[in-house]
Length: 417
Image 1: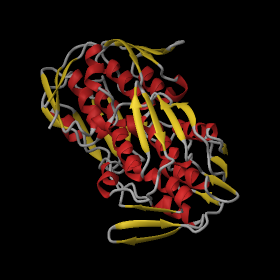
Image 2: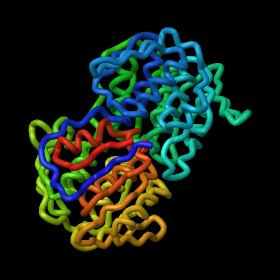
Image 3: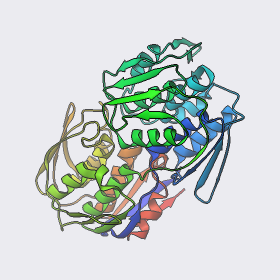
Image 4: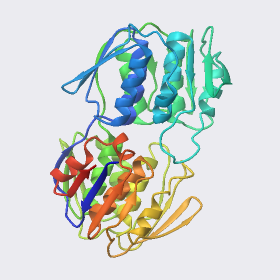
């Protein structure tokens, strides 16, 4: 298995251009099957989750070609509504295909979605919403079968502003008669990106980015050319990597509007952060400061997907930081690996109390999930000596050439098999 070998203690300095957003491109790829046409998607990241989604689309009968940073999805030949079990379990984002398959085929057959082990993450919200649109759901032989003779619009009230449920309802509603309104919708920028993609294909959707989204059913859609938004989680990860190592970074292609919480916390920690015409510029102090209590929350709150990385850089900050994780109940699994490296962390339920030490020690650690793995890479960059990060397949689900990008910024990091 591949692993990262890191010799810490080097400041990250230079420029980095963010890749396309993982959490935007995957639902857009799922939505491409609604066009019965060709979609040209640019700016997508070269990550393993995208490769898995390409395999799923091909298995469904789509033709997918990639070259020069351009992906062409031709869904005219799609002839299947069942997602293969092994691919479904490989990544959770395949759940977006439920809504798209229902809209196009009237049926979707899946197994329980996989992905990172960071909590239960049930699809109950998806099921509750889809049943209100006329979908019948049953489990048989380990699979979940979604079927609808005729989808109809509905007023959907989500108990929690779930990103996945919001996007699945948006996709299913494209094949429904009448109007669908999602109340208490998730507000993440990636949802707005999905809306913009669908509208560029001829859809009629408005309200993404607010708690109320209105979708008028309309199929078939036509093909389009679309560029995926920049990855705000990757942007936050690199800003924190520069901050944790005492470095200086110009982050190109990052939209400061989507990084407000991250920027505010880094300023509290002692960093100088400025918005520029190109993106975001950060200069870190010699040592960060603890930031008190930080609470994760749905957008526009502090994202749970940046909580592990922030925890990592706070392990060497002056003072104490308390993190309250409100989104996933099992997202502190990576912290026991940080403790191996010398971090002073006490966990109590959904709270983690981090008392800053002078430095971390390089150790052999194992990535438990995507973002927790990224946190261990940051800890290795900050630590003294040699750190080996195992199970990096988790990390490569969401970061494109992470070791190469960090090496270009001055890190001593290599990928070995």
